[in-house]
Length: 511
Image (cartoon, rainbow, N blue to C red):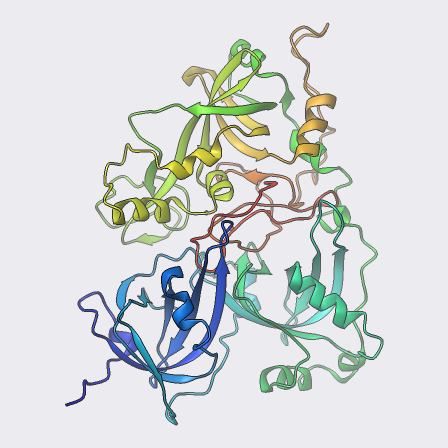
């Protein structure tokens, strides 16, 4: 007697004896900074329902050479958990995890719908109608190349282009590292003429623009597939023959016309002072300083709080569903970082509050993932600080903070640990007590467009009203920023899975 086939739509945690007949729509590898690799994939059944699948490192050798994209198969046995990936690639609320007892057999199937793409409408992107944790498929014609940064010491390849859809809507698209290199190789090929239509899968969408993810995205350029050929055929005849040109604008002009450097943007309208001067501040003040993270300041609230799944606001009751002021209907509040750390510089010490986005950028994982991992390992005490948090300590960084003397603390708005960036601020902007100047504040001229989207050397706190727009790829679970001529690089983080700590972070460009 054979076991009946289950539907993907019905997958839940009620059992592990699932039997799914599916097609593997996409498969990709994720490697963390310790070199530990796991696989993720998307499978779809005959009803068109999809679910994200995880194959952990300890089962990798068994399956890596077996699993092929587009193959159809029967999968027997697996655990089903809530889909807690930082970035999701389908709408299913669950994820399917291979076990030691999972089996898979390739079969021929005719009733599986052909592989397709689910393109996100540019109009919805521009209107902000996007799920904050969802990766999307994008297709568009390149109308202009805004910026090209080559692979030079301290910088990564990035190509920023303007994509236009068939309705005339335009969005910015940032292609990082191998994706940018692939685009440049095509663009610079003298044999390639005419319009360029690109299809980017699993793209991060934020603030009206898109970017490839570090793992899982695929970039198709003018390839002979129905989706691209159909798009190309619908372009006006004159546009089909025109190759996009590179804009003469510099990166700073592209970022709303700002002529200032990343450092000048970082210190704009802030008082630059040494840590020893913080104790003299009587009112809330926006300051820039350079100091080193020393140790955790353990409070009765621990290292996280429960908040909205969309924004950073705190949930009034972590046990109850509610509608947040941002409009999000929160079924279950999620853990978000709020970590108090003593910062030191020479003999001076002060307490800084680090928020969710900065911590996630440095650690390479969300607070939700870290908390869930602790619980899975049998640690349910919320006051226990996991070892992974130690990565936040012993780092010399430039900080842009709001000093709050009433609470004897400073709230971190932006930070950067790039050595050259930190040194420039320390040498050119910070004035020590023993210098013959009183509370010196070096201010950059107040230009309207100074604080524009140049993402490179800093991570921005969610409380920062000046948060940049330019977005970098997700390395795993992070949300860091980078950009600008000096280092138009991505910091953060977030791969499709949200389980991989980022490599070295020169923090600045997705919680």
